[in-house]
Every structure is written in C-alpha cells, then in structure tokens.
Image 1 (cartoon, rainbow, N blue to C red):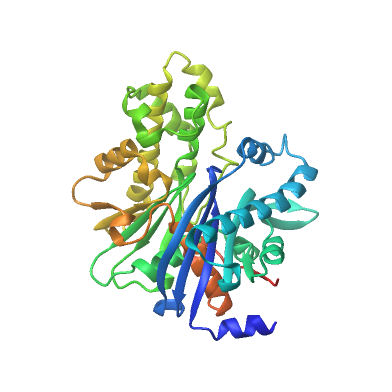
Image 2 (cartoon, one colour):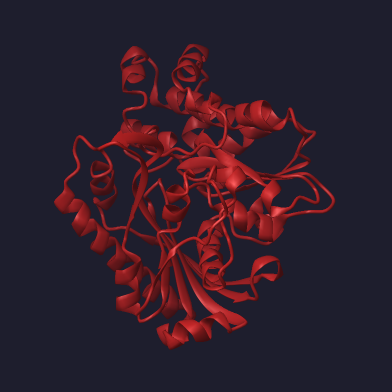
Length: 395
C-alpha cells in the first residue's frame, strides 16, 4: 500500500500498456514515459512490440468465445495462461530496450475480451448486462511485482454503460483541437470512431463502434487463402466488386444502422455472421469476396459518419489507426467514400504509432486510475455517470 500511495505522488512514471484486441493476432505491449495526468499529460513512447501468440491459441480463444463450444474449464485456464503470456511479452520488450522490471512503476492491461453483453438481459428477476475480459491483472501483478490495473470495462458496464469504446478519453487528451473538427478512426477487429468538435470539452466527445474492422476480412483471408490477414489489401485489390453480395451484406447488418451509444464484438461479427452468404454466393472467388467485403467495411464506417455525425457538423480531418491503417486497399476505399473535402491521415503523421496506439492508451488509462481521474465518457458509453475505471491489483 505504501508503494501505491507513493505512486500517486510521482510526477513521471514508466508505464507498460498491454492490449489484446478482437483480431487476436498477438498481444501489443508498449513502454511509455508518462508525465503528469489529465489534460497536462505528456507521453513519450519508449518502445513497442507485437508479441505473437503460440500457434493455435487464436482458434482456442475464438472457440471459447462461442457459447455453443466454450468450456468453463478452458476459460479458467485461459485466464491464467494469457496473463503469463502477457508477462512474457513484457519481459521480451524490456530485454530489447534494456530496462528492468524494477524500473517499471505501473502496468495497464485491457485483457482479452471473451464475451461482451452490454444489453440488459433478465436473470433471476434482475436486469443484467456484463462483460468478461480474461488474462487476470492480479496474476500479472504477482508475476511481475508491479502494480497492475485491469478490467477497465467493468466499472462502466456496472453503471449501465457499454463498457466501450474507452480509447476516446485518450483521443481527447492527446488530439483535441481548438482549430478544427477532428475524428479518429481506429480499425482493429472492430472499427470505432471518436469525434471532437473544435474547442470541445471531455463531455462533448462522441464515440462509438461503427461495425467491422479487420475481423471479417481476416476470417475470409483464412477461409479462402489460409492466411491470417490480407496483407496491405493486396488480395482484395486483385478481386472484383460484386454489387449483389454487397447489397446482401448491407441488408444483413443492422448494427451499422443502430444509434449510439453502441458497441459490438465477435458475438455479432464472428465467423457465423455470413455463413449463409458464403453458401448463397459460392460462385464468387475468394478475391471477389475480399474486395466486396473490404468495400463494405469502408462503407459501414462512412455510413455511421453520414447518419450520426454529419447531420450535426462536418469533420475536417480523419486520423486512422489500428491494424487496418496498414490495409492500403481499405484506405483507398475510405478515401473514395469520404471524398477530398476531408483530410485523411494515418496517425503516425501525428507522432503516434498506428500499431501502438491502443497499448499506449491503456498505459495512460492506468495512470489516470492511479490519480483518481474519471476516464469514461458517458455520452460515448451510455453510462449513468463518469467514473474511475479499472481494478488496482497489488504485487
């Protein structure tokens, strides 16, 4: 407890951020120097690594994210296994950077979302919403000897929020502007957008999940080509757009028309999302499928902008991050939809790594927790009030 109290008074900290997203390709780990907190926060990224999961683990996690196939025994084991893998990722990065665990002040870990049910359901007479992230932060704290903050979504869901997205708080701290209307688009497994009018306050920030990001594209790359993803969108670019398939996907996907606040995940955009369409359009080549689906992914993002943002104000600048920022064909599709009036940039141009952003975000959120700052945004998540996020786990 003495270490925790001392940490709240420390102005400069060395913080590790961990992010394992819905794409389940690896765990992202970032070492960040953080000075101050809240709107005075200064961040310096010291190093970043994408630490690969063992072969077969992605499929094992996906299996245990499906209620029809999951095992409570395996989920319990995964909860500890992932924490150990996160610790290995931490040690790998620190060894490369020549840092020691004893020099680290704090760890912030998102964990791996195994199931997310923000919509209330009746259970024994109670209205219950819930979310479950595994890779227990208490295990990380015990194995590293470093105070660890995790389970960031739970507090927001407890207050009737969606528990996501949480990155908008980071976006506000780092990218708010007094000159332009700015939006930040993160394309991970799921895509989410943060919108900030010039001179906005934190309670003015609007953000929500727009629909699929890389998740469905990755599924098709594996289904047709036995590849984990479509590198640079090259397969999609070599295919042909199919209007009939595109319209069928638009008709099937009612999430993109749903009003914010909203969040989603593998529960909706899992492998079963278009099993019926694969049978119906089995005459199409894999590259045609990927071309059409990449177009749809861009459309789903633009449709959300068109329906929920543009009626209130136009954005001047769109900044893209996440793994999807590396998909050149998806970037081209987005440019076609948004047009030349909006300046589209990759977040690297703003001095933040596209790949590292979310890991850096959870390092910063851990710092906010230690300082007692309210880090959810009710307008974004739908929570009844702003609250401190995360569970503090002592070594």
